[in-house]
Structure formats: C-alpha cells, structure tokens
Image (cartoon, rainbow, N blue to C red; front, side, top):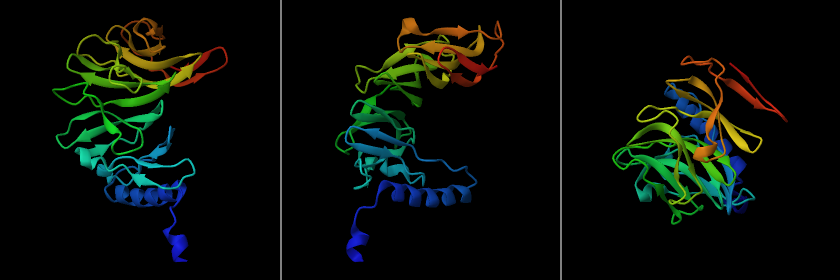
Length: 239
C-alpha cells in the first residue's frame, strides 16, 4: 500500500539497492566494485554508498536502520568523500575532497551542521588521509604534510588531538604504514625505511612506543610481511 511504500526503508535495503546500482555503474566504466563501510557511532550508523555519486557525502540512519538520509556535504564544498568511515567517541572521521581538490580529515556527529574539517594537515596541498584504524578510543591513520611523506598519525576526534605519531622514514621519504592489526594492547603494522626495507612495526599511539618489531630480512632489503595474525601470545606473519 502507499502508506507502507512511504515508510523509511531499513539501511540494509538502502545499501542493497545502492550496491546493485553502484556495481553496474562501476563495471560500465571498467572499475572494480567497492563495498560500502558501515560504522556505528553515537547517534546511529554511518555508511558511504558505492554508487560514486559521492558529492552528498556519507549517509546516516538510526540504530534500527530507519530514517536513512544523506549528510549532503556538498553544502560545505565537498566534491567527494571516502568510504573509509571510522568511529571515534560519539562521532566518526573520514577523508573528504573539496572542489579545489584538497583532500583532508573531516569529522561528523551525524548531522550536516555537525560536520566539519577536523584538521588542515597540509595547508599548501592535499594531506590525503587514508588507512583509518580505530584503536583505544582514537583513530590511527596515514597522512602527508609539508615536511614529511606518508607517515603515521592519530586523532581523538578533535583538532588539538590530531598529530603525527612518528616520522618513521625521516623527512620527505614515506614509510607508508599499512596492514594494521590489534595485538596485546598495541597495533602492529608494516612500514618501510631506507635502512630496514618494509618490515613489521608496533605502536601504542605515542612516539616513544613506535618501534621496529622485527627486521626479518636484515638490512635495507624488505621481508614484506603479510597475513599478520595475532594470537594469544604471539604474532604470526608471512615474510
């Protein structure tokens, strides 16, 4: 009936329909499909459709999957937002690109009015935040600034609480941290330097806790750790 048709659709249905349309659109352009990421935050659930009509930014709904709506960040000059939404506190963070092509770190409380750029990490360019990973009430991510390549950063959801954790590959070189895994109260990940190659590192979110965990292939050659699997007392990986 018409009354039923006008009821808010649960988020599962919204995502299903958008996935179907998004896959078709990307396949028509020879692109691989991208699955949406759903993340629970204080007032509901946020997700990014995969249709790549991303000017409107993330979508949100309540905890029952109803009242799905777009945040419509085009009002703030956003041309594209990332699918890598990650909760922090009662909000969530993500990367967004403005009409000038500047990709920076954004935060939202689930409303358009409560969405804003969290930090302009690279004022003269694009910091391109990526690889978001929730840890201990904060979010680890990688980013670029004027004096450093792609390195490890952290945010607690505030501008003052957003900072580089460690310049693993000093200067404009990039260590490109990736492959984050939670292990025994810390986070293990891969990163590369000219001295060690790409190896296994660990951090608890502070400069002093960030260190090389194992140089499996000693010297500048890389062991290229993969399939990192923490267990009760050890960390297994392929190298």
